[in-house]
Every structure is written in C-alpha cells, then in structure tokens.
Image 1 (cartoon, rainbow, N blue to C red):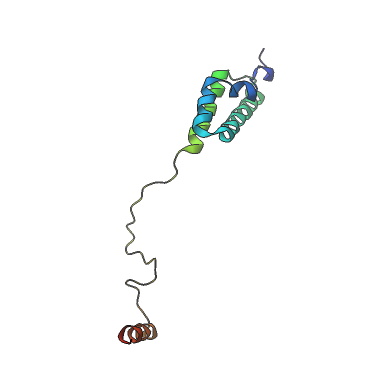
Image 2 (cartoon, rainbow, N blue to C red):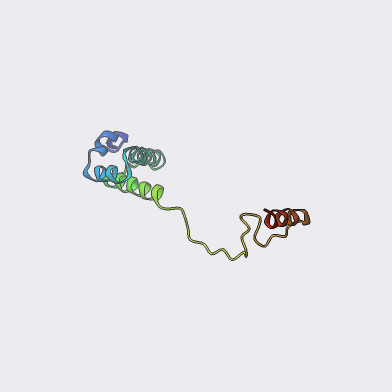
Length: 109
C-alpha cells in the first residue's frame, strides 16, 4: 500500500521505544508536536512526490526536530566595543549641579 494510509498514527509512534525515551528526555508535549510536524511533512512529501516515508524515516525526522528545537541558542561573544556604562556613572561626565549635590552630601553630616 503506497498511500497515506501507510503512515503510522501518532498513537502508534508514541508507543515505540524510541519515542518513549524522547518523551523522558524532551517531555510529552514537545515530542507530540515533533511527531505531528514530521507526519505533516510526510503528507506534504506525498502530495508533491507521491511517495510515503517509512516509519524509520518518520522517527528520524521527529528526532531531528526535537534536537533542533532544544539546542542551546546562546553563543559566547567577545565584547570589543569598549567601556560599558550600564549605570550611566563610571566614566560618564557629570553636570556641575550633580557634582555639587554629591559634594554637599559627602562633606556634611
């Protein structure tokens, strides 16, 4: 049978050992979303090319989606732009009024 009925159901895929281990690692909601996305891609492939992906291909696609969705997005960078003025103090010039107010407070009781 080479039509869409050859695609496994979400329920069938969830009960495979591979998917059970992914549920333990990635959680059930994200794993379900990846299975649904893989099945949708398989349906689109069938509509374009008329061929149905195997269960192994579907599981591979699901796993690739899970890894892609959960890979860290933070990257190490080097800040070579100079001094960071996060408090607007530090090396930032002060107005005479601000400087005088700080001096008045620092020198009095």
